[in-house]
Length: 449
Ligand code: ADP
Image 1: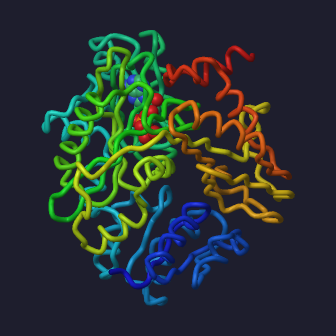
Image 2 (image 1 turned 90 degrees about the vertical axis):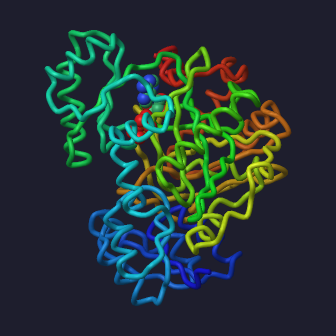
Image 3 (image 1 turned 90 degrees about the horizontal axis):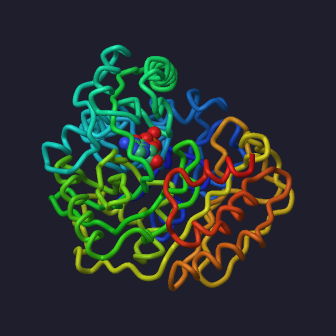
């Protein structure tokens, strides 16, 4: 087993990983930038190493510094969390070369799935349904338009290297294609230094359904059911739940099998997520695979009773999967609301700052993952996720009722948050009915305007 783990991340996910390590008796090393001296993960880890200046490219993205800190601290493994270096194949390969266990799949697998256009082809070859679209990267707007014309509108233009909704545009009219393609590829160039694009048919009124999978190094793969992440703003998830109100046991079994097949086709190991789009007629299509732990992993933990971080650590250490598919039972219904430091009234402008009073509700079936504490100043240069509020109910209605109570009680003063907006979403009749699709948040916002 791993003896000492360096956590190449910050915020609530770093805290989450430290807690799992404590349970397993693994010593922890935090890394931090100068802006994070007072961060909770630094306080909670057994040791902490400063790796550079505040901007992430000077610290959390500096591979050499992180590797030096790993070696110098005598750590035998690195957990990358999500974001930062978590899907960087070069970093995964460097760890391997330095004889450090990278908690995740190998660099070759990250590459195979990280190019989203190539990943589509791998999935097609394995018989996994994908959204109709291009099979080769597209660089030229005119050529892209010819392809889009042949698919029929609407289409969605995406960056092969994409993530976080960047470099993505929905095109409804042929006349808008060229302009949209150009802005999307410009955005992709800026964000990822790579402007290879691909085009898919845009599925209207879709739901985002993703399957959590776990795979060991010996070819064993299980799925842990689905998460419904249809409540999104600008393709960024806001509320996640498990199970999905759109699924039944038959569809779950079928899609779960396909997700396992997809993971096997990628020769995957460790924890990963297969993302699908589900249309109104319950047709499903692969859209991408995430080769890391997800922000929303907690809802799966609540309904399965498993600890995904501990599973990741065991799998990375080379242990065999200790669970069979038939052992995995989903119990109850879990919900997660992402509380961000942002101001919905001002176009969701990030609004970090110093936390005054902090009251985090507790109680039966309540879990809050956060790195906030009273008096802490959230730095402005990192993402705005402030707290992940989760509830577990016997059924969906109970999970929602609990969430409403928790959000009403939650108190985070000193910064603006989207809490009231989340409460608003929860009280919409469509949300209660479980019929929302990925257009829901925009519809609510349009109604307000
Ligand atoms: P990213 O990696 O940037 O998050 P994804 O490919 O995962 O990008 O897509 C993000 C979201 O965009 C999905 O959850 C879904 O809401 C929407 N989306 C992506 N592809 C399609 C599609 N072909 N049809 C409809 N919606 C889509």
